[in-house]
Length: 124
Image (tube, rainbow, N blue to C red; front, side, top):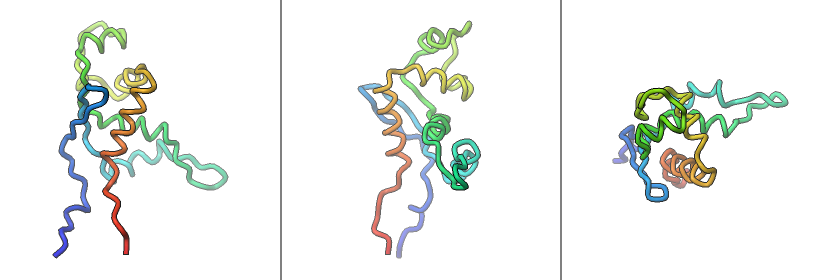
């Protein structure tokens, strides 16, 4: 009998490496993407068009761990207090990620997309 559990997102934290740095990500569920639609879907010529840059911004909300110490976060964001990643709000996290070199940013985005992509199977 077919195991239908594969239809559901395993929400366990996934650790991944980019350029030798370890990040942690909680896979995105359909419910989360649905909640974000008003943020990343635009209407252009009466058609729904995804804004992929905004979708990336939404997905980065699920980036739960980064290799950067609170001192680096404080310096990059010009904060007055040491603040670990998990205590930043979404806007601060996005501001921090936005200051990365674009090549590193692109690799992180690709890793997140790979985590969120289901295994492709032939559809009958």
